[in-house]
Length: 514
Image 1 (tube, helix red, strand yellow):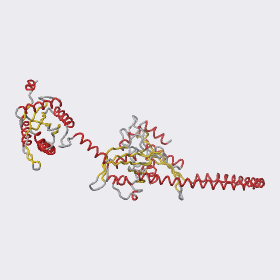
Image 2 (tube, helix red, strand yellow):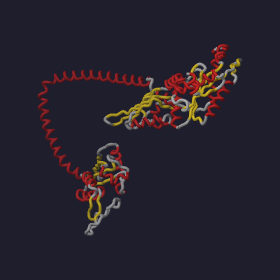
Image 3 (cartoon, helix red, strand yellow):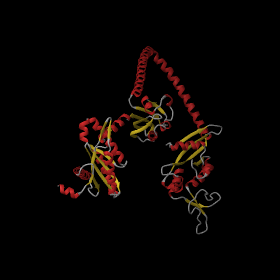
Image 4 (cartoon, helix red, strand yellow):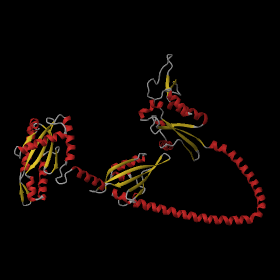
């Protein structure tokens, strides 16, 4: 009823009463028009729900001897600060308890009862500044009164109950005597029934022993299964304390003695090995399941493991009872995936990007250059005189020469540029952010000088040159394929012009050749 009247007050924005000695202005109510004056000069003051509750509590105490008190963990009025018993009750309300009552023993034994005050929309006018939202527990109303009056009312009832028990006992004795006379003829049957009952008890005892043995066996098998599984399994209770920790999980996290972890808060330990895993565990204890395909786990000063991790809350009747962490070592799989990706995108001999990766990176580069209105270039490089080296000295020497050519080309360009081997003795460079045509000419000459330097492979000294075709973006072509085709065409003109030289793409020359 008190809460209903408080809600009525808050929905009406408070009520006004005449100022008096019993109802002076509320110093803890900071709202506009708190103390208006009527046209006749009568001074009023606003009574908000909290002030009204305190006034009502005084009246209730005078009339009934029942003490009503409004309290909070974050009171506006210091007089409303919770005492230890109320503090414990408020903390229970924040965890979902709907009411709390207790009999406090002593010479003046008290019955104490408390219910929470839940924030409604109408309450935010006064309490939004404290950070409360609709549905939050902002405090509670406690009621306390002496046990003695209730105990005094119970005593006559106890006498009545005792008298009724005595009458019942007398009737029971009479019935017992009557029954004993009747059952004498059935003693033999009862003895036989007792013997049969004992036999059934022995049978049931044997069954219970068998069930207990099966349960112990099942628990043992489950423990062995958890310990033998290839994945890591960790179980924690609702407080985040470790309850289950199998050897695989210990290995993945670099923990030696898992026995010492039992009953210990696990999140701080996990934070030192993987902040991500510690965060996932805390989220699961809040009821949020999470999964990650690749999480780095630090298991030592230099070692690290990549694991697939899933953290699921254990929920029963809407309450989180704990969480289970599943870990699968993905280090080797991640390494194999990286190796497969590298093999699919890089030339196995030179380590340069292959055609597929080059086209992808070139397309990205051209898109960035177009947005920035910058110039890019493609240099198509074909080695002059490589086939005689390959035929004369063998494929091993030829491969060594190609590896050295790739090294020299990588050294000639910036880290933001792209170098690739298209196959055989053909190489391609993708160059971005070109300021002028002279920049491309200097780079082309640098490549010619680098490729043209002598090669020493063991005792063999070999020499070769390069022919380079150059196409500019967006001046010559705008698409990746057309830009490569233009650079390839310019490279063939460089070969026809005497090799060991570079040539820019020319639309006029291209038209003549067609």
